[in-house]
Image (cartoon, rainbow, N blue to C red):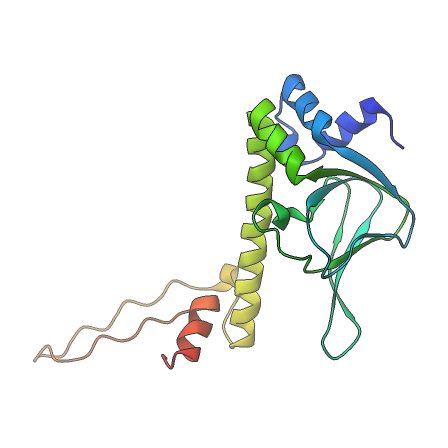
Length: 196
């Protein structure tokens, strides 16, 4: 297990916690449960109840999801300073992926009770945790939007050009305004609902 001083350094690897003062960091440390994982050991399993997030202090993790047709699909890898299981802060639904250590690893877990204690005892640290969670969720939603857009034949968010201006109506002013081009999730929803 990593020593107390190393634990604080490990938390400072998380960009959201880097600016916390010593007192806030101590408040966060008091709410964490530290856990060692052997290579190949699961931190979380897809479908099990979610009640805590984890911050990777040392080692490496991989997240996979079981496919309906069999086999697994790798979702991503986590390096030290990364956070996994963050959806527990927003939705206590079952785990959507399996997370396994790819080498001996150390994680700091923050359960729902610890999150409540953090909110009451160290509100700046609580705000940092929630900000980190929302940034992760926002990034994943953008990635999902881009994947949907690519499946529909569009361009990823970064490559999208501004929409051209709408053509002017004819002399009689009776031209119907064009439907706006929609990308990603909005485009998929429009297609499902029969839009353009």
